[in-house]
Image (cartoon, rainbow, N blue to C red):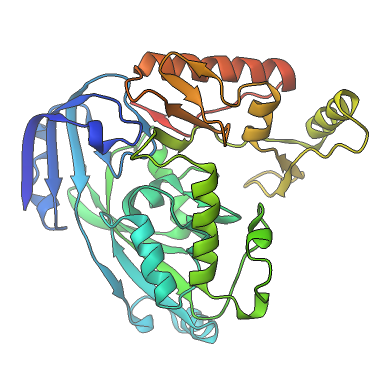
Length: 364
């Protein structure tokens, strides 16, 4: 069924809590509903949103906002999706394929998987948003990206008016990026459901952040997805504001990836400023299409080094416990205040580190 409303208040549909309205709002709860929508006749522009957790509305939306309420989690038969060779590999690893509707809250899926004893998404627990948006954004946390467990993404093509699907290779996933964000086709494909490849074989990933410290005392060989999920939630709650209490879009900036030479310059400057034993946090990463070693440096560290942690600007502020997060501190912040703070942070990081920060949050 399709529900349509005009001049819909979107305040509760974006976690930043921006007080904006949409000229037209349409919500559907089945795949078949998409066939009935006359996309060419919708008020333009057209925007499909999930939980609104990665958006900064800068004004009222003058077009049509679409939202999925497709809500199901279903285990699939292995033989439905694989060639003989792939199937043998899947079974040897005790892989379980799970189809999930685009409107499912992603953390509800993580909770379901953990309770089923299935590994793969526990490190992504408590990330706000919905399953459809997760496949577009390639969400990630604590050493895991959702692309690591996606097998297929099913969509409705609004141009050809047909249902299509993308293998994970076709999604062209990168750091917080995918083919669905390509400006040339952005908005063309509406995700209806996603097939994930989870595992019954224990696969704990504990190398990122202070996860091992939180799990200290629990033998690694006996850990369960539920235990890791609880640890992840504990860490996130301690570092990040609850959107229901303090509006934000989570991590506002992407972590920059730089060359080894650039990183060494930053290390030298940090040691000169502090001491020769000072350690700059970093991670070695592999970048698609790049043969040289690259280094990811936490944007949060850079922002804190520039003195922004806990600083307020009008109704906006940098979160006091995690400088990667910009918050609607008063609950009444204007978009201009958020954007102004963003620009000043970018400028100061550029000056100090010669690094250009890029927002992870999409400006609408």
